[in-house]
Length: 358
Figure (tube, helix red, strand yellow):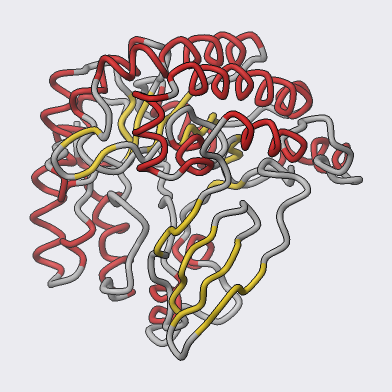
Protein backbone atom coordinates (compact mmCIF):
# COMPACT_ATOMS: atom_id res chain seq x y z
CA UNK A 1 0.00 0.00 0.00
CA UNK A 2 1.33 3.43 -0.95
CA UNK A 3 1.47 6.41 1.38
CA UNK A 4 -1.26 8.07 -0.68
CA UNK A 5 -3.53 5.05 -0.33
CA UNK A 6 -2.80 4.88 3.40
CA UNK A 7 -3.66 8.59 3.75
CA UNK A 8 -7.12 8.08 2.28
CA UNK A 9 -7.71 4.94 4.32
CA UNK A 10 -6.81 6.71 7.56
CA UNK A 11 -9.09 9.64 6.78
CA UNK A 12 -11.85 7.13 6.01
CA UNK A 13 -11.47 5.73 9.55
CA UNK A 14 -10.03 2.52 8.16
CA UNK A 15 -6.89 0.78 9.34
CA UNK A 16 -4.40 0.41 6.48
CA UNK A 17 -1.36 -1.83 6.79
CA UNK A 18 0.88 1.23 6.33
CA UNK A 19 0.88 4.37 8.49
CA UNK A 20 0.91 7.52 6.34
CA UNK A 21 3.55 9.87 7.76
CA UNK A 22 4.41 13.40 6.72
CA UNK A 23 5.09 16.78 8.29
CA UNK A 24 3.55 20.13 7.49
CA UNK A 25 6.92 21.78 7.02
CA UNK A 26 10.51 22.23 8.15
CA UNK A 27 12.15 25.48 9.21
CA UNK A 28 15.17 26.25 6.99
CA UNK A 29 17.35 26.46 10.12
CA UNK A 30 16.20 22.96 11.10
CA UNK A 31 17.28 21.57 7.74
CA UNK A 32 20.65 23.32 8.01
CA UNK A 33 21.15 21.77 11.43
CA UNK A 34 20.07 18.34 10.24
CA UNK A 35 22.55 18.46 7.37
CA UNK A 36 25.31 18.56 9.99
CA UNK A 37 23.67 15.63 11.82
CA UNK A 38 23.21 13.08 9.06
CA UNK A 39 20.76 14.47 6.48
CA UNK A 40 22.73 14.47 3.21
CA UNK A 41 23.01 17.64 1.17
CA UNK A 42 20.60 17.65 -1.74
CA UNK A 43 18.32 15.05 -0.13
CA UNK A 44 14.92 16.01 1.28
CA UNK A 45 14.07 14.82 4.80
CA UNK A 46 11.00 12.91 3.65
CA UNK A 47 13.06 10.91 1.17
CA UNK A 48 15.83 10.21 3.67
CA UNK A 49 13.37 9.21 6.41
CA UNK A 50 11.11 7.10 4.21
CA UNK A 51 7.97 9.20 4.75
CA UNK A 52 5.96 11.31 2.35
CA UNK A 53 5.28 15.00 1.77
CA UNK A 54 2.58 17.09 0.14
CA UNK A 55 2.98 19.09 -3.06
CA UNK A 56 0.88 21.68 -4.81
CA UNK A 57 0.26 22.32 -8.52
CA UNK A 58 2.38 24.92 -10.35
CA UNK A 59 -0.37 27.55 -10.56
CA UNK A 60 0.03 31.29 -9.95
CA UNK A 61 -2.51 31.64 -7.15
CA UNK A 62 -1.69 35.00 -5.56
CA UNK A 63 -1.66 38.52 -6.98
CA UNK A 64 -0.73 38.19 -10.64
CA UNK A 65 1.22 39.93 -11.87
CA UNK A 66 2.76 40.39 -8.43
CA UNK A 67 4.07 43.70 -7.20
CA UNK A 68 7.75 44.25 -7.84
CA UNK A 69 9.68 43.55 -4.67
CA UNK A 70 11.40 46.77 -3.59
CA UNK A 71 13.74 47.69 -0.74
CA UNK A 72 12.44 51.04 0.53
CA UNK A 73 15.01 51.57 3.29
CA UNK A 74 17.52 49.55 5.28
CA UNK A 75 20.03 49.57 8.11
CA UNK A 76 22.62 47.08 9.37
CA UNK A 77 20.10 44.52 10.69
CA UNK A 78 16.77 45.19 8.95
CA UNK A 79 15.26 46.37 5.70
CA UNK A 80 11.86 47.82 4.87
CA UNK A 81 10.49 46.21 1.73
CA UNK A 82 7.37 46.18 -0.38
CA UNK A 83 6.68 42.51 -1.05
CA UNK A 84 5.20 40.80 -4.08
CA UNK A 85 1.85 40.95 -2.22
CA UNK A 86 2.09 44.75 -1.93
CA UNK A 87 2.72 44.55 1.82
CA UNK A 88 5.20 47.03 3.31
CA UNK A 89 7.08 45.38 6.18
CA UNK A 90 10.34 45.44 8.08
CA UNK A 91 12.35 42.25 7.65
CA UNK A 92 15.34 40.98 9.59
CA UNK A 93 18.65 40.38 7.86
CA UNK A 94 19.58 37.91 10.61
CA UNK A 95 17.91 34.68 9.58
CA UNK A 96 14.26 33.71 9.45
CA UNK A 97 12.24 36.04 11.69
CA UNK A 98 8.65 37.19 11.57
CA UNK A 99 8.41 40.56 9.78
CA UNK A 100 6.95 43.72 11.29
CA UNK A 101 3.99 44.66 9.09
CA UNK A 102 3.74 48.38 8.37
CA UNK A 103 1.11 48.69 5.64
CA UNK A 104 -1.18 46.39 3.64
CA UNK A 105 -2.57 47.01 0.15
CA UNK A 106 -6.29 47.16 1.02
CA UNK A 107 -7.88 49.54 3.53
CA UNK A 108 -10.92 50.71 1.56
CA UNK A 109 -13.24 49.77 -1.28
CA UNK A 110 -11.17 51.93 -3.65
CA UNK A 111 -8.05 49.97 -2.68
CA UNK A 112 -9.84 46.70 -3.33
CA UNK A 113 -11.06 47.88 -6.73
CA UNK A 114 -7.52 48.92 -7.61
CA UNK A 115 -6.04 45.52 -6.71
CA UNK A 116 -8.66 43.48 -8.58
CA UNK A 117 -6.63 43.69 -11.78
CA UNK A 118 -4.06 41.49 -10.01
CA UNK A 119 -6.84 39.14 -8.88
CA UNK A 120 -8.19 38.16 -12.27
CA UNK A 121 -8.28 34.34 -12.33
CA UNK A 122 -8.27 34.35 -16.12
CA UNK A 123 -5.01 36.27 -16.52
CA UNK A 124 -2.84 34.37 -19.03
CA UNK A 125 0.12 32.67 -17.40
CA UNK A 126 -1.56 31.50 -14.21
CA UNK A 127 -1.33 27.94 -15.51
CA UNK A 128 2.10 26.93 -16.88
CA UNK A 129 2.61 26.02 -20.51
CA UNK A 130 3.32 22.39 -19.51
CA UNK A 131 0.14 22.05 -17.44
CA UNK A 132 -1.35 19.25 -19.55
CA UNK A 133 1.79 17.15 -19.14
CA UNK A 134 1.91 17.88 -15.38
CA UNK A 135 -1.74 16.88 -14.96
CA UNK A 136 -1.25 13.70 -17.00
CA UNK A 137 1.64 12.64 -14.76
CA UNK A 138 -0.18 13.48 -11.50
CA UNK A 139 -1.81 10.05 -10.92
CA UNK A 140 1.60 8.39 -10.68
CA UNK A 141 3.07 11.05 -8.37
CA UNK A 142 4.59 9.28 -5.33
CA UNK A 143 3.61 11.92 -2.74
CA UNK A 144 0.40 13.64 -1.66
CA UNK A 145 -1.16 16.23 -3.96
CA UNK A 146 -2.77 19.22 -2.30
CA UNK A 147 -4.76 22.13 -3.73
CA UNK A 148 -4.72 25.40 -1.82
CA UNK A 149 -2.23 27.64 -0.07
CA UNK A 150 -2.65 30.93 1.78
CA UNK A 151 -5.11 32.11 -0.85
CA UNK A 152 -7.70 29.52 0.11
CA UNK A 153 -9.65 30.92 3.06
CA UNK A 154 -11.91 33.72 4.19
CA UNK A 155 -10.06 35.08 7.20
CA UNK A 156 -6.43 34.36 6.36
CA UNK A 157 -6.69 35.67 2.82
CA UNK A 158 -8.41 38.89 3.87
CA UNK A 159 -5.74 39.34 6.53
CA UNK A 160 -3.11 39.06 3.80
CA UNK A 161 -4.77 41.96 1.99
CA UNK A 162 -5.79 44.14 4.94
CA UNK A 163 -3.54 43.17 7.85
CA UNK A 164 -4.90 41.81 11.12
CA UNK A 165 -5.83 45.14 12.68
CA UNK A 166 -7.28 46.43 9.43
CA UNK A 167 -9.41 43.32 8.99
CA UNK A 168 -10.70 43.33 12.56
CA UNK A 169 -11.68 46.98 12.27
CA UNK A 170 -13.33 46.38 8.90
CA UNK A 171 -15.63 43.74 10.41
CA UNK A 172 -17.10 46.56 12.49
CA UNK A 173 -16.70 49.61 10.28
CA UNK A 174 -16.94 48.16 6.74
CA UNK A 175 -18.96 44.92 6.93
CA UNK A 176 -20.31 45.42 3.41
CA UNK A 177 -16.74 45.56 2.08
CA UNK A 178 -15.90 42.30 3.87
CA UNK A 179 -18.86 40.56 2.23
CA UNK A 180 -17.94 42.08 -1.15
CA UNK A 181 -14.38 40.81 -0.85
CA UNK A 182 -15.56 37.34 0.19
CA UNK A 183 -18.10 37.20 -2.60
CA UNK A 184 -15.43 38.16 -5.13
CA UNK A 185 -13.06 35.61 -3.60
CA UNK A 186 -15.56 32.77 -4.11
CA UNK A 187 -15.74 33.63 -7.80
CA UNK A 188 -11.96 33.96 -7.99
CA UNK A 189 -11.28 30.58 -6.38
CA UNK A 190 -13.91 28.69 -8.33
CA UNK A 191 -12.77 30.13 -11.64
CA UNK A 192 -9.08 29.58 -10.87
CA UNK A 193 -9.46 26.07 -9.48
CA UNK A 194 -11.97 24.63 -11.94
CA UNK A 195 -9.39 23.56 -14.48
CA UNK A 196 -7.11 22.03 -11.83
CA UNK A 197 -9.93 20.05 -10.23
CA UNK A 198 -11.18 18.88 -13.63
CA UNK A 199 -7.75 17.65 -14.69
CA UNK A 200 -6.26 16.27 -11.45
CA UNK A 201 -7.54 14.22 -8.52
CA UNK A 202 -6.02 15.90 -5.47
CA UNK A 203 -5.57 14.08 -2.19
CA UNK A 204 -6.96 16.98 -0.20
CA UNK A 205 -8.05 20.60 -0.32
CA UNK A 206 -6.02 22.83 2.01
CA UNK A 207 -7.77 25.84 3.58
CA UNK A 208 -5.49 28.28 5.42
CA UNK A 209 -6.82 30.57 8.11
CA UNK A 210 -4.40 30.97 11.08
CA UNK A 211 -7.18 32.72 12.97
CA UNK A 212 -6.51 31.87 16.61
CA UNK A 213 -3.90 32.40 19.30
CA UNK A 214 -3.15 30.83 22.68
CA UNK A 215 -6.32 32.08 24.36
CA UNK A 216 -8.78 31.37 21.55
CA UNK A 217 -10.04 32.66 18.18
CA UNK A 218 -9.24 36.13 16.89
CA UNK A 219 -12.92 36.67 16.02
CA UNK A 220 -16.10 35.53 17.72
CA UNK A 221 -18.18 32.53 16.68
CA UNK A 222 -20.90 34.99 15.65
CA UNK A 223 -18.51 36.74 13.25
CA UNK A 224 -17.53 33.33 11.86
CA UNK A 225 -21.21 32.54 11.22
CA UNK A 226 -21.77 35.90 9.56
CA UNK A 227 -18.61 36.52 7.58
CA UNK A 228 -17.19 33.06 6.85
CA UNK A 229 -19.60 30.14 6.96
CA UNK A 230 -21.79 31.18 4.00
CA UNK A 231 -18.71 31.20 1.79
CA UNK A 232 -17.35 27.99 3.30
CA UNK A 233 -20.58 26.21 2.43
CA UNK A 234 -20.53 27.53 -1.11
CA UNK A 235 -16.92 26.53 -1.66
CA UNK A 236 -17.54 23.15 -0.03
CA UNK A 237 -20.39 22.46 -2.46
CA UNK A 238 -18.12 23.44 -5.33
CA UNK A 239 -15.29 21.16 -4.18
CA UNK A 240 -17.65 18.20 -3.75
CA UNK A 241 -19.20 18.76 -7.16
CA UNK A 242 -15.70 18.77 -8.65
CA UNK A 243 -14.86 15.46 -6.97
CA UNK A 244 -12.72 16.60 -4.04
CA UNK A 245 -12.49 14.05 -1.23
CA UNK A 246 -11.21 15.90 1.84
CA UNK A 247 -11.34 19.54 2.92
CA UNK A 248 -8.75 20.23 5.62
CA UNK A 249 -8.41 23.52 7.49
CA UNK A 250 -5.15 24.83 8.93
CA UNK A 251 -5.05 27.20 11.89
CA UNK A 252 -2.60 27.63 14.72
CA UNK A 253 -3.82 28.55 18.20
CA UNK A 254 -6.81 27.34 20.20
CA UNK A 255 -9.60 26.63 17.71
CA UNK A 256 -11.79 24.66 20.13
CA UNK A 257 -14.75 27.07 20.03
CA UNK A 258 -14.78 27.11 16.23
CA UNK A 259 -14.39 23.40 15.48
CA UNK A 260 -18.14 22.64 15.53
CA UNK A 261 -18.89 25.60 13.26
CA UNK A 262 -16.41 24.72 10.55
CA UNK A 263 -16.97 20.98 10.86
CA UNK A 264 -20.70 21.57 10.47
CA UNK A 265 -20.07 23.72 7.41
CA UNK A 266 -18.28 20.96 5.53
CA UNK A 267 -14.69 20.94 6.81
CA UNK A 268 -13.66 17.28 7.07
CA UNK A 269 -10.57 17.72 9.17
CA UNK A 270 -8.28 20.20 10.86
CA UNK A 271 -4.61 20.73 11.69
CA UNK A 272 -2.14 21.14 13.36
CA UNK A 273 -3.66 21.25 16.91
CA UNK A 274 -1.03 23.40 18.63
CA UNK A 275 -0.30 21.93 22.05
CA UNK A 276 1.12 25.19 23.48
CA UNK A 277 -2.31 26.72 22.84
CA UNK A 278 -4.03 24.02 24.86
CA UNK A 279 -5.13 21.81 21.97
CA UNK A 280 -5.44 18.22 23.20
CA UNK A 281 -6.21 15.81 20.37
CA UNK A 282 -7.40 13.05 22.72
CA UNK A 283 -10.04 15.34 24.22
CA UNK A 284 -10.96 16.73 20.81
CA UNK A 285 -11.40 13.22 19.39
CA UNK A 286 -13.86 12.41 22.20
CA UNK A 287 -15.81 15.61 21.56
CA UNK A 288 -15.80 15.28 17.75
CA UNK A 289 -15.67 11.57 16.85
CA UNK A 290 -16.00 12.13 13.06
CA UNK A 291 -13.51 14.97 12.70
CA UNK A 292 -10.33 14.03 10.85
CA UNK A 293 -7.40 15.09 13.02
CA UNK A 294 -3.90 15.70 11.69
CA UNK A 295 -1.20 16.79 14.12
CA UNK A 296 -1.26 17.36 17.85
CA UNK A 297 2.21 15.98 18.69
CA UNK A 298 4.02 18.57 20.80
CA UNK A 299 7.11 19.59 18.84
CA UNK A 300 8.73 20.70 22.11
CA UNK A 301 8.88 17.06 23.24
CA UNK A 302 11.48 16.55 20.50
CA UNK A 303 13.78 19.20 21.99
CA UNK A 304 14.91 17.01 24.87
CA UNK A 305 15.55 13.32 25.34
CA UNK A 306 14.12 10.36 23.46
CA UNK A 307 12.36 9.41 26.70
CA UNK A 308 10.50 12.76 26.45
CA UNK A 309 9.37 11.80 22.96
CA UNK A 310 8.24 8.37 24.10
CA UNK A 311 6.13 9.88 26.91
CA UNK A 312 4.44 12.33 24.54
CA UNK A 313 3.58 9.63 22.02
CA UNK A 314 2.45 7.13 24.64
CA UNK A 315 0.01 9.70 26.02
CA UNK A 316 -1.70 10.22 22.67
CA UNK A 317 -1.09 7.65 19.96
CA UNK A 318 -2.79 4.53 21.34
CA UNK A 319 -6.10 6.35 21.93
CA UNK A 320 -5.92 8.20 18.64
CA UNK A 321 -5.06 5.13 16.56
CA UNK A 322 -7.86 3.13 18.18
CA UNK A 323 -10.40 5.88 17.47
CA UNK A 324 -9.24 6.27 13.84
CA UNK A 325 -9.36 9.21 11.46
CA UNK A 326 -5.95 10.36 12.66
CA UNK A 327 -2.61 11.16 11.03
CA UNK A 328 0.20 11.90 13.52
CA UNK A 329 2.26 15.00 12.76
CA UNK A 330 4.02 17.65 14.80
CA UNK A 331 1.85 20.59 15.83
CA UNK A 332 3.78 22.99 13.59
CA UNK A 333 6.76 22.99 11.25
CA UNK A 334 9.78 21.13 12.61
CA UNK A 335 11.91 23.83 14.33
CA UNK A 336 15.71 24.07 14.63
CA UNK A 337 15.63 23.02 18.30
CA UNK A 338 14.89 19.45 17.16
CA UNK A 339 17.96 17.22 16.68
CA UNK A 340 17.77 15.03 13.59
CA UNK A 341 18.22 11.88 15.66
CA UNK A 342 15.18 12.87 17.72
CA UNK A 343 13.11 13.52 14.61
CA UNK A 344 13.93 10.07 13.24
CA UNK A 345 13.24 8.50 16.62
CA UNK A 346 9.83 10.19 16.72
CA UNK A 347 8.94 8.84 13.26
CA UNK A 348 10.08 5.32 14.19
CA UNK A 349 8.13 5.35 17.44
CA UNK A 350 4.98 6.48 15.62
CA UNK A 351 5.26 3.48 13.29
CA UNK A 352 5.88 1.11 16.19
CA UNK A 353 2.88 2.49 18.10
CA UNK A 354 0.67 2.08 15.05
CA UNK A 355 1.79 -1.50 14.50
CA UNK A 356 1.22 -2.52 18.13
CA UNK A 357 -2.05 -0.68 18.81
CA UNK A 358 -5.22 -2.65 18.30
